[in-house]
Length: 390
Image 1 (cartoon, helix red, strand yellow):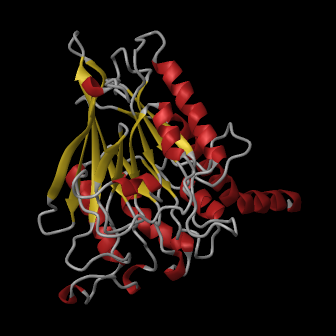
Image 2: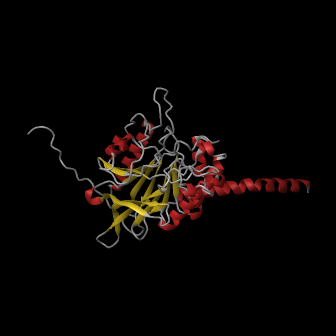
Image 3: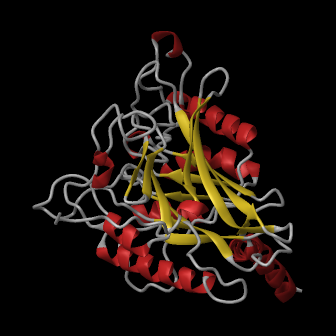
């Protein structure tokens, strides 16, 4: 009898651990089997949320709002904006592009993240995240923050690629968006999403300022891009050009400084806070040839898109109310929609166009700056430039 009781006690004591293990295993299985795919309407919509700067919820005040907005304004305004955007746009996928929490003011990083990502988790919409330069400034390291993020329900984020032994940073991974089920593209990735850790601050004493995307990450991107292109351009349904790709990271590249009001859509109201060195990642993107746009945050009162050498470089604009901003300049989010072409058989084919717009957190959730970033008809068209001579 005593032996039986001991066994029962041990089993009961271990039960919570076993339940947790089963739940964790189930979540891991969900993440590996859950895939992104274009719907029957031939569209795939992505909501980008940049710089939430979440801290301790209702006790955390808003920054840079108009005097009449100060009273009662807190992180909860950020939460309400995420909910509004999800309800209004009904995205297929949500991307959080760093500084998701503001570590200096977050008493407990895990609790801050729980609250920051809560609307996305509750929506059951697949989502992903990368790190900014402030996420690790509370009580968790960058690795700890990313490991916490990948444990959430419905996230497709990864700590790092499983096939890379050595890679800088945390949160480098890619996701494939499949074609419409029942079409010749259902087993092909017709839109590729790349996520990279742009770092926080330079770790090289002689180089001041922010971090950058390192050679190991660029090598991983090149390998991944080449592999995806090869798969897309072989039978069945062999394509002549690569599937378009989109890249998401936090800190803008130095090339963002190429734009002003004359050659971009949106506004530039502050300097480009990129790394003080150019790591060459923009050149890597151009060489790869598949990425059509890169989306960042970091500089909250810049929200422009400009095209350089065939690649759109886009800010989302500041989203969070505990982030610095500009009083009277509404917090905002960026939406991107990829649309498939109609096949001759009447079904859906490859991606035909990629469009974007922004939504403001004003009374009407106003839509501004709608533009086409890329169309298939313009892909691969190169004009021969005459250099020198008569």
